[in-house]
Length: 472
Image (cartoon, rainbow, N blue to C red; front, top):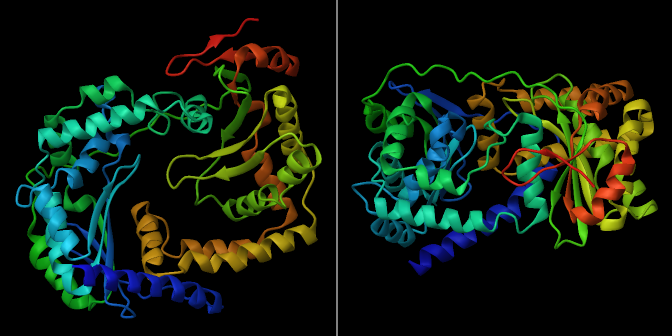
């Protein structure tokens, strides 16, 4: 067993050493040759051969994210995904599975998500059949043991009890609620009541409804032959016919209404610093202006970016400062800007951020600056494909969301055509200063007087509650 782990470590080290060199040398990237097959039960399979090392890795995407949770069982999807691995299958109890994976220096993990749940694995190529069999058992016959569910619930409650320890974590959790609304899947956060409410039978029902082969995207990369592996999967996985095969209607979401600009103050009197975040609605990854957005992000961020140069270096108002468009595959994303500052300079930081964002909306970037940024982005584009595993993972995502297969290559071509006017236009679209709620976390008593000088509405935002008007 020790020898297996040593070999795996050497193999992974070789991957790490080789991949950047290949990436840097690749001046004419080509789309990888990926074999596709669709099993009789609807499961989509993507196979990418890579014989450089005796390793295999894979990822399975499942259309079973938390957006599918009912309002009275929020948390069911996350628990179901986590329990696939932590509860194992009926055929392989968790202790046995852990032991046999360790003996083979293999891994098998599951991860929840808002839109998609995922399972991933890694092993030596001779152990691929073993790992695929265990993965198949997790998917088709999970045990969901009650004791393991309670352990997961207890750990989740412990994490929840510490969720307000870090102001940046508070901001990341609460800011989306101001944009999407507290009940939207992109903004909802689990409460202790949610965790206590979910039962084993909820997981069983969710699994039976959503974990079915026609909702799976399976990608495997490594040391194998694609054609025989596809035949093997058809003979095994392809025979799975879930008991519930009724059509699942597409999830309907309510149109998003842009919010108005106001300051929302979260009182954390123990803090001597303030955390500021502001956001407005943006767009999706497949929007025509996505390439121009990446230029805007590069323009604003990093130590050489405009925000750091002006607000951190020249004005000395922030320990950290940032502003970037964050598009989603499916729902509209956000433009988020913010930073951390000393409590007495909180209002000044807000003013400086809004001023710099107003400037990038009103003044086009120079041709010289655009060329420098474009060159940096094009040079870094190759690092999207540092390894076959990374390449296949990106393809799976684009296929899952029904994006064009050549989506990333279209981005590269579009980047070459971006103009200063395009960058200004995307700034005007994504940065809506009159529709940009501002979240401030810090000592309310010290902050409220200076925030009221900004001539913007100020409201208290108690954690896990609805906002209330703030009074002196």
